[in-house]
Image 1: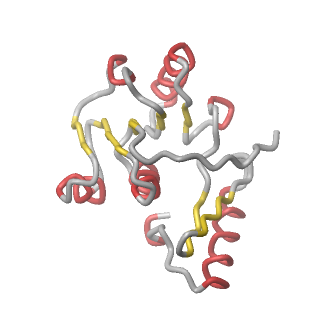
Image 2 (image 1 turned 90 degrees about the vertical axis):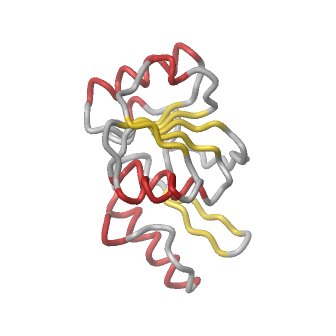
Length: 158
């Protein structure tokens, strides 16, 4: 399946990220560039997430996910390393009508999370329908090189 690239205003949207590893940190970092209100719920968090919380850029709740955490959310990203938990989050989001992305399983996603290149007020989203992350990374790097644009991503963590 090919996904249609839809650009949406997420400024001030209430976005929940469940998970505190490198994938969650990269996604939070990307979303912060678009003025989203982000809450991260995880028992353990990367230093990057802890730093973003210390800078007041996101809310970090250090505990396990609970179903009530979905209440009032506009968008949810499940980025844990627990397959069953990610599937449970996706199912609950569907029941509540909340768009969800599961980083480890494209079949559970309502939308794909793109790789993003930004050059002033131009935003480019790159996606391979969840199938070839290496190719997406390669294309993003080529675009950043052509545009001489600093990356949103920390290549040492990818």
